Length: 220
Image (cartoon, rainbow, N blue to C red; front, side, top):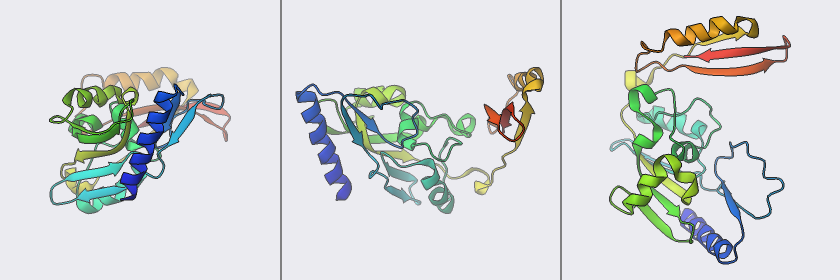
């Protein structure tokens, strides 16, 4: 009931903004790095849309528009299900999905958008719709990969499969100093044509304050 009331509130906000030509943007999980401090418009906060409903027997998962990866890890594990989530726990799941949804399991399970079944969305003209392959199919197609420009997703439903290997995974981190730059990229290149579907590699560059040097991190 609260989620529906919140959705109706944002529906009204969008109608007011559109009618009066007021620029607006939406904050979901809040992981984005865009600088809006000088934005002259309306900021719509979805932080209350963080609900989780998982039916372990059917594998259908419905989450609010601001639910974060860290909130799903335990419920999915307990239900024996999995979703190809990203590796950063603070990322909003819906926002990541609308951009494609690359995660550690994408070689095995595909992208997060591949698991997306439907969304509830407030469109640019303030209409609250259900979009799926059978309802407003064109809008649903557009959302999957470029959805940030097509409306405000208040909730999303996914079909989550049973967990691989009984939910047991291994993660290994390898840290290379900047001086090993060539070696690092050689290691990455070696996996170009032989990377198994169940293995994912993430490369990150960071500054180590302790050693006062730039490092590269390979997580697999």
